[in-house]
Length: 143
Image 1 (cartoon, rainbow, N blue to C red):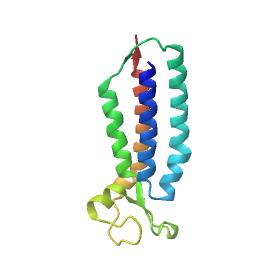
Image 2 (cartoon, rainbow, N blue to C red):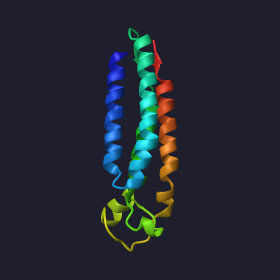
Image 3 (cartoon, rainbow, N blue to C red):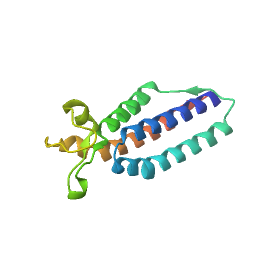
């Protein structure tokens, strides 16, 4: 059980590092620091409390659920705001996916049209990722 806790802690730290690396913007940083970081902290704390109480037991992981978690995490990273140049003038943020595919500069002006469907999916996918992560932890059984 302790090995699972250490692995899960490493996953949380690595995930948060990826999220911060993908947020080239203040908007992404604010979302990750003020929404995702407290959620990660609570999940990690509750997981370790459970592990300490059941440290001699073994863990059974449902890999399909954790595959969904990782897929949603990748989707969140791709829809994360990557270039918010002009947002103060009521502009929109380009997503990381559009920056990768259309060669939009990570900083600076671009006159390419925005992919509003992808950009608007960011917060919904982040919520879906959080629910899937919670579902993954709750579905992990001990014996």
